[in-house]
Amino acid sequence: MDLAEFISSLPVLIGKAVETNQWIGYGAILLAMFLENLIPPIPSELIMPLGGFYVYQGQLDFFPVVLAGLIGTVMGALPWYGIGRLVNEERLEQWLEKNGRWIGINPQELSRSRKWFNRYGVSLVFWGRLVPGIRTLISVPAGVELMPITPFLIWTTGGSLIWTLFLTITGFYLGNNYRNIEQWISPFSSIFKTILILIISIAFINLIYKTLRKLIIK
Image 1 (tube, rainbow, N blue to C red):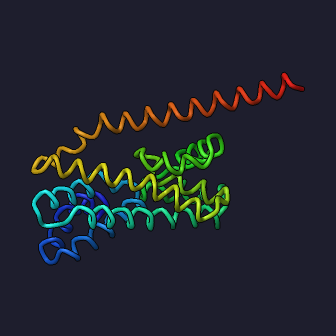
Image 2 (tube, rainbow, N blue to C red):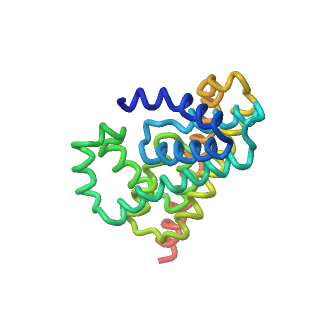
Image 3 (cartoon, rainbow, N blue to C red):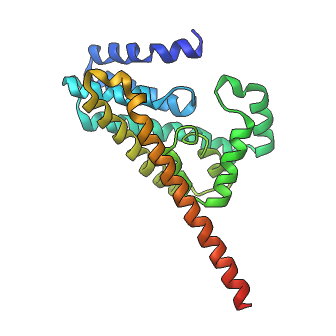
């Protein structure tokens, strides 16, 4: 089974887990979200709305679904953080050049995420969890820059909680139409990206202001 087949079969696998036992269903969501963070092509937009759908049907409870998704997300961020701490960026980029296609990451994306981290600071660990395409990668530069584990977990958990809550609630209210999640989530994804760009712009303007102020004082 290749990656595309595995991704397309995820809803069926989670559905069978829910039918077997409620707690096995929560475990399946946790595992799926762990893999989603470990292997970026697996979309969280496929997993958490499905959990919300089962809450809508009464087969699962809301808070355990969100908690399972949150735990899986944070656990999935840790391996990339650990890789960032243990492997220097050059060696990691060389490895991605050869093998990145299997996990959906290329060296250019890694380099871009590190530039963002260096420029805009640790708050990106929080905001980056809300932006598809950056969610997983932002953990790597946090590790490369030796960000302490406690702030990393706090920022990662905060951003991930908002994302898992949003997707679960959306899946719940869409009900039987949860499969149309990408059409519904696209405007909100754009809003998140706009907010992130706004925050980055403000930080950049503030940096310029402080720099100019120091030059004037000198």
